Amino acid sequence: MNSNSIGRLYKPKLRISASLIAAPWLELNHTIKDLEYNGVEMLHFDIEDGHFTPYLSLGIKLISELRQFTDLVFDVHLMVDNPELFIGDLVKIGVDRIALHWEATQYPLRTLNMIKNYNIKAGLAFNPATQIPDLTYLFPYLDFVNLLSTEPLTNNNKFISSTINKLECGYKKYLKYDLEWVIDGGVTDENILSIMGCHTDIVVIGRYLFEGSPREKIDQLKKLIEEDHQ
Image (spheres, rainbow, N blue to C red):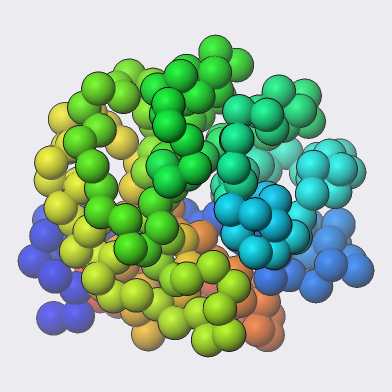
């Protein structure tokens, strides 16, 4: 048995949020159409400020330009200090989901409420070293939890397997709140069964998806999951 026993209680659907930070940037419009054709439901955007994370990557202007090419869900991950400063501009673009970092805000309820007031989904992201705290007081303002399963932009970006246990514990504790659980980073054909077996709702996939043909990678992941649940 490749998946854990909890995963056997249901048949998971592979929902992919494709991380465009790993995509070839010169033809992003064509890449997006290809992803859409092959069943990707969301496009994942990491916005960095060079402070909360020591890098700069996708910016709001680029996300705005890409919105015209697709109706796919825009899934934004704010890896920034002062995330509340970005929310209004992102909403104007037409994003559908925004996750801010637990480590980056002293008042998560206030910031989550700002997002919810725009009638889009609000999430909290957690770095690999951060354990999930008591989230009860954040409901009903919290729609999803994004667990980083790699250290951001390290050279090897290896999957941190303890993320699976972290998600499983969170799922059990907050089952009645109907949260979406997201694993973000290092997802490959080698770990997809373990990831999907812990009630993961969405996987953020970047590098693996674009090392070759996205269509072939998506088909491979789906086939593994289907065979495991036959």
